[in-house]
Image (cartoon, rainbow, N blue to C red):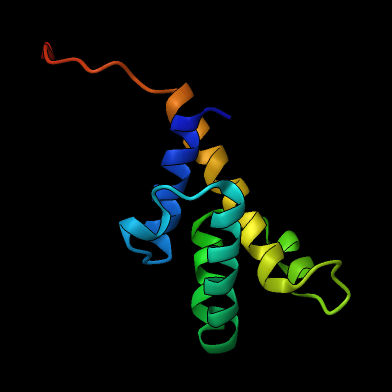
Length: 109
């Protein structure tokens, strides 16, 4: 993934999790994961329904979210969900850049 896609993914994550622009604009992917995992942990504790609704809106596979929330998961739930969010937003950024439509000013009706 190129830097533009990572920048776009960071912007999408900052918007969805209400992070300030200074919180996420220059973070590496590992730093973003750590920051996002903290946010997800808070949401799991205080606003689980909101978090699950966000996972649905972001089109993250429900089975993957269920596995991440399972007590038998390989890593803490907040880290697993943060990884799912980052991966999905990177996919969205790539798709947006790859299938970008050319801008046309001359519409003929």
